[in-house]
Amino acid sequence: MPTLLLVLAGLAILSYAQQPDRQIRKEIQRKAIKEAQKEAKRYKKMGFDIMPGSIPMEKQLEYTWTKLYQRDENGQSVYLSADGNGVGATRTAAEMQAIEAAKLNLAGQLETFIRGIIEANIANAQLNNEEASSVTEFLTGAKNVIATSIGQVEPAFKIYRVLPNKNVEVNVKLLMARDQVVQQAKKQMREELKERLKGLQDKVDKLLPLQ
Image (cartoon, rainbow, N blue to C red; front, side, top):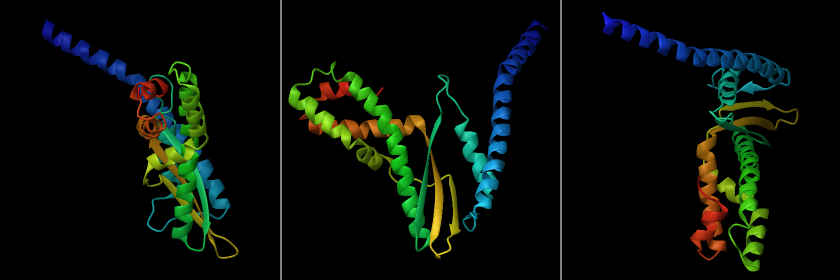
């Protein structure tokens, strides 16, 4: 009997501990559905439609908003998002342009974050004047370096409309796990810094630690 009581007590505690998570998930879903409906209505009013064979616009948006509302234990977004827009003679051309624009958007967000880390660590890295100048110069084009680290990615949200001049406009939203994309960007930046600093790994580690 005591063993049974302990088991029941343990199950009760587990159920209580899980309750807040269920409530959070329920609240996230409620907010996501609300935002998705509002945003879909706005896009449809502008003449946008989903790609042939895609799931309904509301469901695409609900998925993206569900991800965007998620936070880690530090209160940071679990996912990063970036919007992109493209116009072309064909839907494929416009989509490619929109994805590249979104990747640059995402790279810009990552650049701001990583630049802050490097600039804060320049003094600690004990760079000489030539090295400091090289790093500063490198940072001016860091966004393009980071963009190459993102690679191929399938948009989480994708819609299009035909313009009066028969060109096609495409809107996309990229959605990527924050930790993963930050680590990818850091590794790419560290490789570039290593070349700039003539392979001095200890200085690279001080400028931009992986963790």
